[in-house]
Image 1: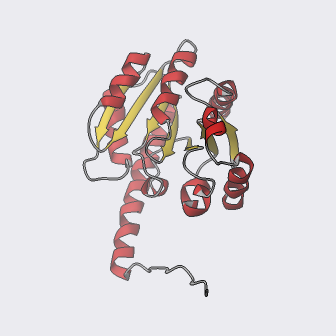
Image 2: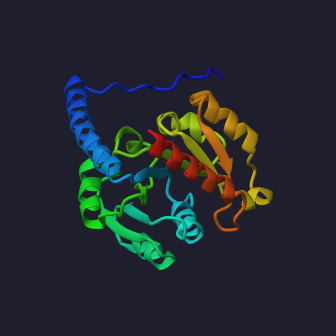
Length: 232
């Protein structure tokens, strides 16, 4: 059977110009957020993933394990409900919930408003749990120090190839739910190969947020980012 090439759709020029205008305006606000955070020595990490990858569970564990070292605050992004913010507060972190309605991502203006409400203390660690989506969040700078993409072994090894922009924009990929590897057909080495085809510089850590596997490596990565930001 003849293999057909994928259909590549082009945006109309007017739509493309509008998108560029939106991204440019967002970038200006993101730089304002970045300066605001730098003035207070607050490091921000933007967590990206598809729904159900385990972002909130990872944050709960991180808050419980690192909360004694430094203040941790969280901006929670979801289309509806404040359930994740409630979970973060129960774990010991301060949280502000942003509901985007039909929106599929957080933007710099939303984060700016959340920062005013959270008012993180100097030398805090800020996590931004973005809306579960592997497309739109990759395009929007929020003023963060780094983007981290979380994938799980239940999602398929080809995610980096199907959604390259989000892996290209991220400094680190956390491969979560490795406790489920005996029960799924998933090859971690092949997944990492695909991720590095898209982004040769991306770092990778395989973890289980529920069981605790290799979370120490994740915490060390966070500590290194904090030290690097303080030197910069």
